[in-house]
Length: 451
Image 1: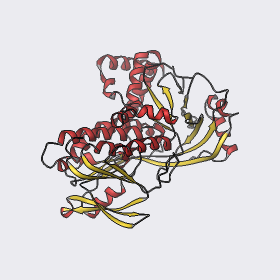
Image 2 (image 1 turned 60 degrees about the vertical axis):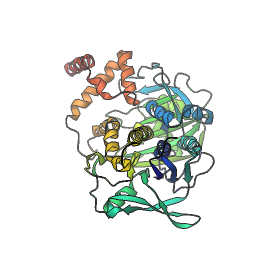
Image 3 (image 1 turned 45 degrees about the vertical axis):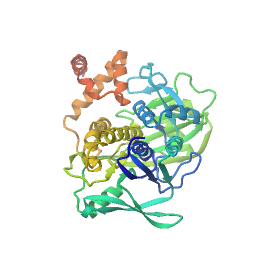
Image 4 (image 1 turned 60 degrees about the horizontal axis):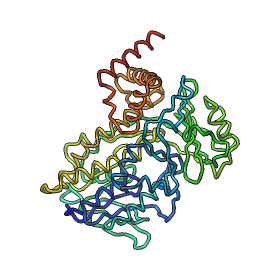
């Protein structure tokens, strides 16, 4: 371990964002304390603080590689715990409108599907193996303590089950609480302007059932995604997880809720645009109850637009931006942000007062990280009822995306590029390369001529 830049860092929240942040901080602080309000058991189990924890989670390839940087061998740990390895492209059957299915191709990279409790359990175990990281469960952060007249922080007030109230000194407080309430409360109490927010109101409701994978399961896919169209907004998916199980999810938007009873759920699955999903599960054994989850809006807080920020305070993950979970981006984005934090701390280590220099460069560094999935989240404006400011040129963006999708169906190289962008392995700026732009524009012209 290199010479620490400070003594104590406190991380609020032991989800993927908080655990990733703890690993990123471990090389730069003498001790890292992770505070989690929920009870944390020795074995994977859903917890109240993760509202969508009983619903499917896919780890994108870019997210897996980020976690491998923070916890070397993380993928092997997932596999040993029972996570299902899938080859991106070949093991995923995607049924888009006009493509039943979209071409399945092997692009040479893989990731894992598993339950949210399992990935958290593996990350938590790896974090606790770091000698200077301590995870404290059932500790609720009541307040971030101001220092220097509100220009910085000096710790947190907490409540815990054993000793009641307690004050922890900290040189750095990282807010990985999920919705960023501690950071926003601190900024308000100390007279700081809050960050501007952009929201995309989608009001999406998921219903998820878990099934034992039947012996008759299809052999040509491990993951199934069915996308709705203009006539049938219902979409859904089948996702493998540990214990030879499937999570089967259906979703509706703008207040239209899928059923949560067994008969209604199966009827809903049967009405989805294609029959693949229903045929997969119609004879499968359901395990447990059907769970529902409501997600009102994607929200992005523009911390990067602030001119100043308190010394020793840093939000991360969902505290900065939380996305419609249907796109499966949140865990991966949080892990990639933690890698940026680790890199930045290393570059600041030899500078005067590195904690005073941390926040604004961090916000600048992760802006392009967030821009990519936020561009995907903007696709929710395809529904006229979606709340928020529709992006300028949105119809052109949709036309571009449709043309790119058509090209990718015919051209494996374009398909690989599109998949790499989706999995955070390449930037979407690659689409603007002249040779690709020329082909996309020609496809757009051909599509327009056919209307």
